[in-house]
Length: 325
Figure 1 (tube, rainbow, N blue to C red):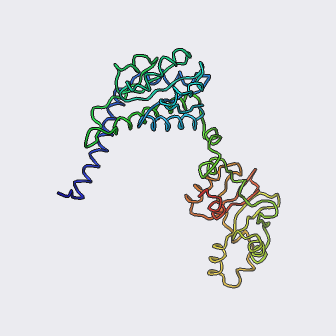
Figure 2 (cartoon, rainbow, N blue to C red):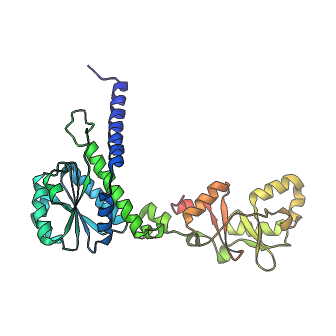
Figure 3 (cartoon, rainbow, N blue to C red):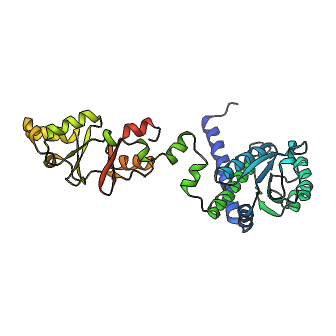
């Protein structure tokens, strides 16, 4: 008999709630062992060698990648390949992080004496505290689940989810111990959209020098329009005799002025028509911060200032083109 959409939707919700409850239960029972494990990893002079097999192996790859992305040297060791030469990558100063729900997989268990002989410490994430893995490890993180959530109760679901969450929690503690900042994180992610957001600064994208539209107080709106159209930003900065920023004049200001004054608008002094509180940003601010300020204030440009003097201008279009917005 075909299953209804409602029945299938309820099955999906049940599975997700089952896994969520296993995580909550584990969080409530979490003890200081995870802190001990994090401190060992923080003090490690080598690499974190993450080992696993099957579904736990896939989880191990992600945990290893997470550690590496947060500044902890790590690589994944396939449990089956290890005994065929890959153990040569392991050194005494390394730490082995073994992931196995049963803690009794032959390929995992066979690695334990080798790590002991090498002298590398061992941390286990396992669902069985009485398993060979748990008995041999220096530190054991309990990943026991009451139910997998799988309709057949055969495929690892809750257990692998919990292994991943414990690995993430471990990585988070190590990050805190290392004092990793956003700037440090950017060093490990120089490519792609994430790298652009974390590394690109306003000064990398802003128009400056001869490309900066700027006029002095005292000129007319007509004079300012030549600068606006010539620079292509739809706006110009206004400065006083000392070069300090006093305002901004945009095409929006021009429309409003013409509605009010008609053709006389062109003869208006720029300081009488400008917006006196322009939105500004430091040229050393992240471009992603410029996006936030632009969206928050519903403007299209920001003026980059140093010592109250305009040094650049950045438009939302430049941020979009750079893949920041």
